[in-house]
Image 1: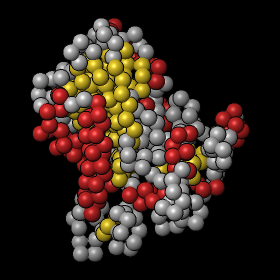
Image 2: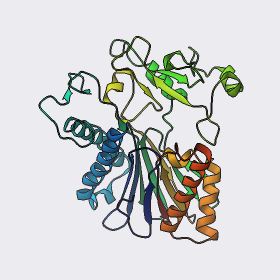
Image 3: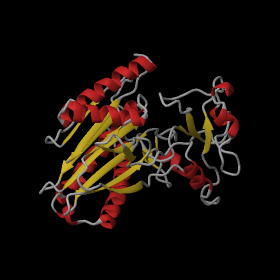
Length: 365
């Protein structure tokens, strides 16, 4: 499955995994005078609701920037920051509208359909919350007068973005909003107790521990990781979630939460309205980088269906080999890297369990 594909500078594609729905979406735009490149990946979760969320995010990205493709060339970093923050809020709200308009799997709203409660949570007529949402990783490159680029990354969730140099080094353009992130743990813990009387618990996914709130905590009360699980994770019943051997982790609600119980592998996302009451955030992290003069770069944004199959340094080397040694076009680089990622995913996780995969790349000559 493919979405809009741009000129030779930007290319994106996605491959459906073993799940029922393709929940990954992507988008890209180039400004009127080709000074600005915009590329994005949205990795949905929640089955059909994840598909709705990621497609809504993609479509909202395009509708937001389409009338601004000339004006945005004059924006400075603060202007870009504000516009990206505004865009994330608009996407979040638009997903809510889309959830309200449907009763699942494309069925339009009925008189007894979904409602929005006083807290903005979308619920079925039974009162149960709608589960589903999407990550969002948007990268923007702005060409400066001296030929370098200012690169801005804005994200919620775990769809990682990287800036790869032609010497194979790389920098992250996104924050990993996972339940093993110390800053995210501190953010949730610092939320006002009156506004958030019940907060997300950050846990490891332990074998044969079926009630997630009973799984071992990632962090001790002082905010440091429990050294027992850091030093010997597999000996204490944990399991890796990717080829980097990072232990599987979740953000879950306490035992006292029933109807709105949450178990999610990230601490920020768009949608997932029911989880916001426990500290899940829709506010993006924003990173700003500057390229070096005379050095070529490649931006890569992908869903975890790609990243779960690579060590980041190996992906960077692989991309540079396709780019510099095989001299592939951006289109062929994306198609080759995506196919290799799917092959690795099936090998590592099985043909019945591998995830959707999505990759967008942009060259900065």
